[in-house]
Each structure stands twice: as structure tokens, then as C-alpha cells.
Length: 72
Image (cartoon, rainbow, N blue to C red):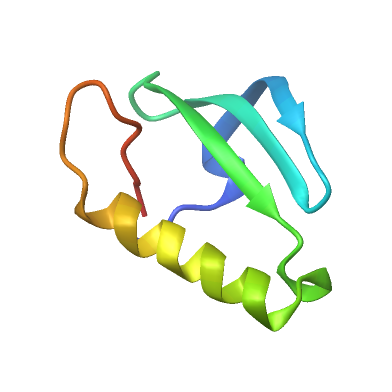
């Protein structure tokens, strides 16, 4: 089941950059604290889009207690 923005409470903005922002959020169903990374994909160059795709693919594969984990 896909999640939607309404399924989370935004606690605060962690940081912002050229293409978006990261926010600390709480998932309403279980109160789990997560980070929501939101990017403006449309304003990226093709090379930046490729680097973003590589980052997502890498995060999908990483499984380590001290490394941020990708949730979909």
C-alpha cells in the first residue's frame, strides 16, 4: 500500500538545498521517526538525475545499523 504525505506529521525541517529539503517526520500509524527527503527533480540536469538514481539504488541495497536506510 503506497504511503501519502497525510500519513505523516512533519516535526521540523532538517535542512534545505538547491533542489529540495529534508524533514524529520513521524509516521502516524506507529509513531516511528523518519526523514523525508523531497527533491525538485524537474530542475536537475541529466547528469544530476543520473547521480540521484545512483544514490537511490545504493540506499536500497545498504543494510547496516549505522547507515541511513531507504524506505519506499
